[in-house]
Length: 235
Image: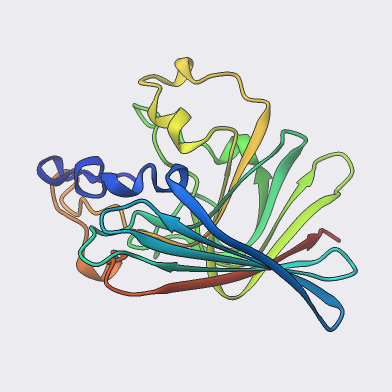
């Protein structure tokens, strides 16, 4: 998430969350049947200071549909959370993004009124915005459902949620974008990076430079977050 506040930059303010996904410890893994579904539940301890908790539940149905539920319990007193959701590394052949939400250009929690709600389609590579320096881009807010498919066959995955969600599909991970100081230095990509999020925090910068993110567009760590979505075959 871009943050223009040079005196309070996101990497320093919320850096504890940068490696949270790499510093998790599996505490339990269980499964059971529930009607026609198999339910797989995993509980993690995230090594923040103090520690945070994460529970992931996958409800798998006979037709291959998977209902995903994510619950994050941040440790007390931790800084704001940049984003909450899941990241998928998918084959590069899944290169066509379609969504019903705000678009067609990228938009964010505090930068979305100029993006109209509708149905949009475009290649994942075309969601990249060539800012002066590579950075997070391509986000879509207020998404009801989205699919990522092969351009030639139309086969792929469909994602939907009972609540509004945010979606981003690009050829590069956030770390790859941040690790390149010019567009031509971005590494060759053999994947599509899909993010299905509850929310990203806003981008701030109301004065085009140093204004911080408004409090109502942040994800404070003093509460529990629960988010769910369904994924299945695109039809």
